[in-house]
Image (cartoon, rainbow, N blue to C red; front, side, top):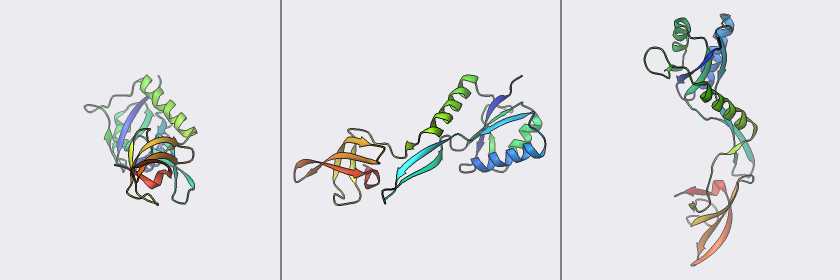
Amino acid sequence: MAKSWYVIHTLTGKEEKVKASLEAYVKNNNLEEQIGKILVPTEQVSEITKLGKKKITKRHYYPGYVLIQMDWSDQLWYMIKNTTGVTGFIGAGKKPLPLKESEVKTILRQAEEKKEKPVPKVIFEKGETLRVKEGPFTNFSGIVEEIYPDKGKLKMAVSIFGRSTPVELDYWQVERI
């Protein structure tokens, strides 16, 4: 019988430590038969720094959760529940419900897609009103006309002396109002 996937709730920011602890426990106690994969879904995030450099970081897209593939047993439940950083399993009652196969496929597909291409950390939309927080147009507001996510820039119409003027700015120079 195939192992089922369960969701472990962790303290936010402790996902990787919980994963490492569980993997070490599995290895040290020869539990590879009962426990399959342990997954912390992450995505690559790109941002443009103030110096104009592109920086790619990793971000959890389900903060506070770890997925585990396992054959359910009270012994494993107790071991996982008592792992430092774990607050419990997701599900009602004493025994958590496994994820549906369709949910698992969706999560695994998302994880694979998000691993390959970085997404911008800040996402703006055309028509959105922003305020300039840095540079020669500080405190001016404007409407986003074009977005260049690969460059980390956007073009917005700023009203200067009563005239709408297109201005190209870096993401870090603007903020939402």
